[in-house]
Length: 196
Image (cartoon, rainbow, N blue to C red; front, side, top):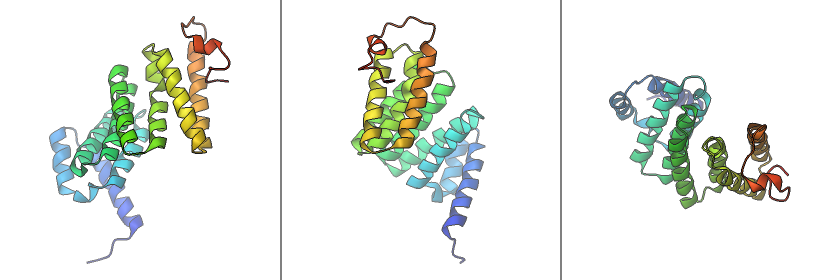
């Protein structure tokens, strides 16, 4: 039996993930995943999440299929970190699909699970992803609290790239407020504004 080296294994997994995205219903995805047990791994759930992020603005249906597949794998693994990763992926799909309330429910559940397993940076990444849904639902105070929590975690962990992404998101959120009167005292106070 030939030895499969890690780059080959990774390429094979990526090919299988692309095939998985073509499985149009839950039954077909489950059949596919049962045939390919090599996809039952934590790193595959992480790869599925990364692929959802790549696809979600290009092909929402394929992104949704992969998010659902990551949920299936996470349940097979019985791993809360994987469950959280799959919930965050599903949240992104729901957000792009305009289902903001459902997206927030997924993000909230993901934050709870990431907190439980001690993945604080992933808590921040998830909250950062939820900011736009909070804005669009008019939950301005929650949005500001989430942004503050994200900033504190990223600063604590010295994550300059995360802080840059948060700054970019906050700039976009601020731009969304332009031309509107918003009942949110934090934006008017430079000491509590996330933009200061």
